[in-house]
Image 1 (cartoon, rainbow, N blue to C red):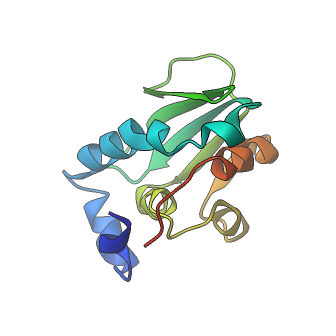
Image 2 (image 1 turned 60 degrees about the vertical axis):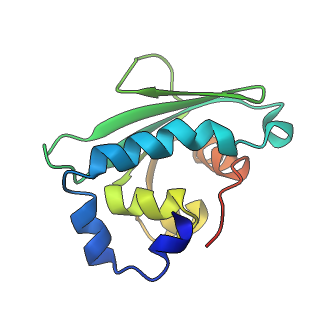
Length: 135
């Protein structure tokens, strides 16, 4: 998917991520996310990061929670409650770029594309243990 998105205009990604393909894309990204966790780098981590993804067809943000517990990764759809070290809020098209290696977490935060509530360091730790394929 990373190669397919190289050079795609933001306007097109925004359109895709606001329509009927959005649930399929998000489900697939979050389903596969544990496959990209580097267990060695995540071995000492214990963190919970929430995602609020804006710009969907219903107007309400989709919510997902990613937990890293000493190398093991679990992803839950919705808002299961409980503690979050941080919550990342962004538009769906920015999340798609983030998930495919076309937007770095640091760059996204600095440019205002990713808003982090809570511990920014924990949010960046999540990014540091993911081996995202590059285009």
